[in-house]
Image (cartoon, rainbow, N blue to C red; front, side, top):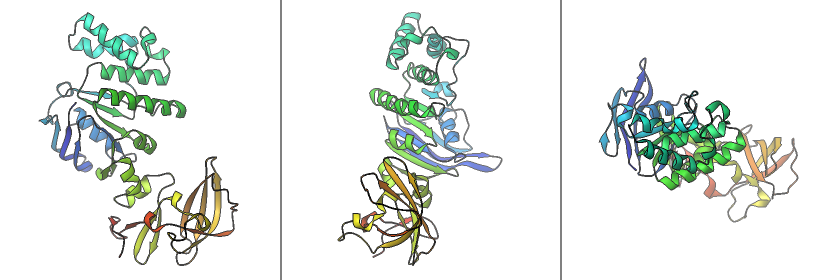
Length: 342
C-alpha cells in the first residue's frame, strides 16, 4: 500500500487547463473515486498519476516519493482501462502473465501468481481461451487479474465497468469492492456514474472544469454539497433549488413530502405546488411540480416511496412541506454553501 498525492497539479492543452491546480491526498488502502461529467479532467488526472501524461506543472508523489517525471514502469502502479487493453492474440493465461514475463519472473513463480490471480476472479477455467471468446464481464476480470498479479502499490482504474450491461455492472461493483478490500491496495477510480461512485468510494472527489469542487465521503457530498454544482450533479433527481429572501435553498427530492406525512412540530410552512407530471418507478414515484407564491413557476421534484400510498394526480394542487433540518443554503452569487441564516 502507498499514499498518493498531487500538489498544485496542472495540465494544459493548447493553453487551456484540463487539470487546474489540483491538490489531493489519497490515504493508504483507500478507494478514492474521481467523479465528474465528460471533459472535467478526471481521466487526464488519472493518466498523469500513471505517467501516461506529463504535468505542465506541479508534483505527484506515490508513497512519499516524487514520481512526477518517472515513466509508468518505475511507479509500481497497475492501470485498468475502459477498453481492458487485452492482447487479442494471447490466451487469458498469457495476458495475465505478460507483466510477470516482462519483469523476468521465473516460470514456476509466474504459474503460481497467475493461478492465484485467476482464482481470485473466478476465471481459472478460462486460461486457455482468447479474449474474443470471452464475455464483457469475463474480459473485465482478466484485466483486473493482470493488474493484481504484480502486487502493485496503487491501482488506477479508468471506467473499467462502463462496457458491461446494467445487471453485470451491479455484480461487478460488488466483486470489485470485495477484491479491493481484501487486498487493501490504494485505488483511484475514474467514473462519470454517480451510482458507482457512491457505492464504491471511501471518498469521492467531484471534479468540473479541471478543479475539485468537493472531496468527501459519499454521505457528505450527497447530504452536504459544497456548492451548487455538487448539489445538482450528485443525486438522481438532483437537489431542488429555490430562492428565498436573497438566499438559495436546496433540498433533496426525498425530503419534499405531502404535509400530512411530516411531523407538524418539525414542518416548515406548507409549500403549495401544482403537479405537472408523475413517474411511477415501482419502489418510488417522482412527482414533478411547480410552486406557488412566493416562488411561482419554480420547478421542483418530490420522490415518494411506495409506502406513501396517497392519491396524487397530474394537474391538481397539493400542499407539500419540508423539515428545517433538510434545508441547505447557498450563496446566490458564488454558488458556495453557507450556514443557515440566523
